Amino acid sequence: MTATVIAGGGTAGLALALALGARGHRVRVLERGEAPPDGPVVKSAELWRRPMVPQAAHDHILNALGVRTLRRHAPAVLDAALEEGARLLDLTTAAPGAVRDEDLVTLVCRRSVLDLVLHRAVRALAGVTVSHDTTVAGLRLDGGRVSAVVTAAGETVPADLVVDASGRRSAARSWLAAAGLPAPDDRTGPSSLRAFGRFYRLRDPDGPAPGPLNRGDAAGGIWGHYSAVAHPADNDVFAITLGTLPNDHGTAALSDPGAFTAACRISPYLAAWVDEDAVEPLGPVRVTGMPPNILRGAPPLPGLLQVGDATCVTDPMFGRGLSLALTHAFRLAELIDQHPYADHELSDAAADLTDQLLRPWFEQGSHDSWSRIERWRAETGAAPSSPASPTPPVSPVSAPLWAAAIAAAATDPVVWRAVTRARTSLTTPARLVADESFLARIRQTPEASEALAPAPARAPAPPPEATPPTRAGLREALTAALKGA
Image 1 (cartoon, rainbow, N blue to C red):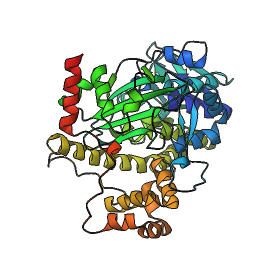
Image 2: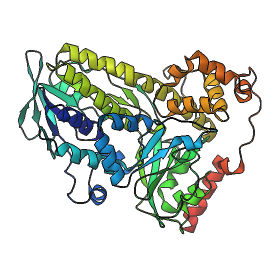
Image 3: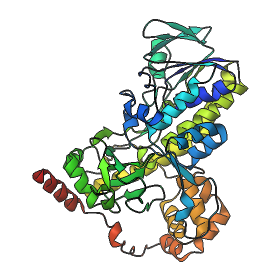
Image 4: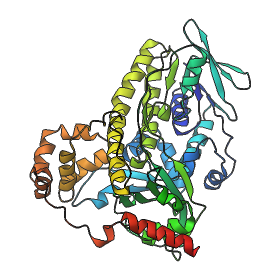
């Protein structure tokens, strides 16, 4: 069996270690952050200091792809998360008619709780060792392939295979440079997103949710000049995240708790989620810049692979990253098991996996991010993208056709199921619209016919509860909240 070193103990690194360890491989995980404290899972997760993983302090969802991956490859991890207060949400309850699809569920759980459940499952495996406070500083090569890693403390750790699970910073790039090897070409596309997030807990754990989940597993929406979404999590906890353009100075006040609450109160579907009689905040408003969409090239070195965000990052607004990282890890483990010598065949198979599983979502995410950025720039008065900028990403699916599918899904349960499977990463939109029977189905609905018309009809007015504030209205609410503080 292959002796593998995994550099990084986040979700992807732990999942890969779990999958390989369960197959009998010898694995050592080297994680630069500190170990989680002992004790009950939920409490330990809340106390776990993870400055190297700042995104863990923000909301995450495990969409239908991620749940299906755990069900197939790590059902004990899913069961343990549920025992610790995570919940499965059945998305079919939002369908416009009867729909049966056991895959259409999402897991609502804080990232730290899920990671700690994974961590303890990995530590229970006899062939896996997890070393914290340990940073991989470089590689040792022998005969043109990886033979070991060297830690920042000077320890040499032999390895048949090294996997970069260091996240979006991709430490392998510096390792290759230090070894005198060229870094592979990367593809990138901006997300241009700043997130303001805060966690809350329901005051009455036995009471109903504060408001409806109009998005299936969330409340709120992505509006014309900002986003505002509440995501349920485990143990009566939920998070609200507001998204803006990074250079939108008029919304910087959202970092103030009062201004954040004021914005939630005037955002569609969110007012009830900040009702002080129903909820209590669990901490400050946390502000973070979101990473761009990234697709890494394959490392040009036998014995070196990448997993999770070290391979592909997608716009966090669309909620695909955690599920793609988990799925990539378990499928990569299958390839490693099939190629025990960690040779060029394994490198080629890993590159093919990236192309099949991750590239379509990078391309979709790059286009969706670009479309949102241009819409937000127009509404906030920001300058559009420079003519000197790279050509806008080509949409895998034409905008009118996808709009027709969304419109048809509002009334047709068959179309709704197909569209929801695409929205939750079980299939890609491009694969969906390549199905002639699906296209024929959406063209039969009046809503789709209107969306596909050459001259689009005026869109119907949204219901009052779904009308977001104007740009001026949002800024006025923020200013008033700051003055009243």
